[in-house]
Length: 302
Image: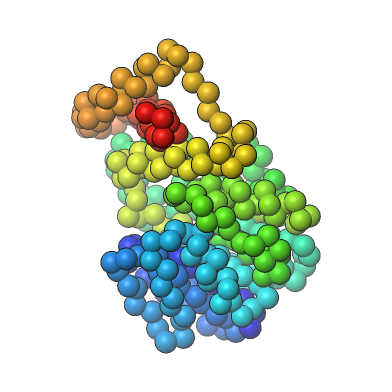
């Protein structure tokens, strides 16, 4: 067995099916184990006989990844989000990297598919994402990104993470006490780094991040709030560098915005009627994001 691919999924039937089909096509020349961990209480994905399907309803993505890893037979694990589409090129490249690099956890690059990129240009929210470079791993990673090379990184993310099973087991896998997905990806590499593992990103090869079902402003704003709720849990676990401090005047403003949130949201729709209004649209989104983050981070104290 050359690699065990672990794909947690929950209620994203169409997107997941494309991910699974891509994984099967990409690995049909390999000795590969694909493990799908279903976190849904309502929907059960359909998988072929050569794919292992286990149920982990409502336990969260960290628990799902851990459950998949326990069943893994290969020495190399590849964790995939359920909207990441791999190729023969990307999987072969990943295997070759682990033959060359020792003591390593590795990410490849990701980009939105071309069809999705084209759709984004048609809406105010899509143009907002493109303007803020949120359609690629490079845009999310920031100024330290290095194009077309293999480079050392201070961290890794789980969207497409390859790691030896022994290294994964050294720290007991992912922490399962975060209320939503997100900051288990902050905690996990912190603990891995303490074992002496090296982190790499290879920007020479990319996979496709197929978020076609999530290019939605309300979903995006809700995700900002959920991430802030999880961030508060991370602070409680001792990651005090993630704490957010608000001045009294900012607290007053953000509380008013949250109280008037439906009105702000309706105004935002007015700004989306023409590309000419995109600057106002982007400014309004920034205001709503700040309000949702404040609400999520302070949800236990409001």
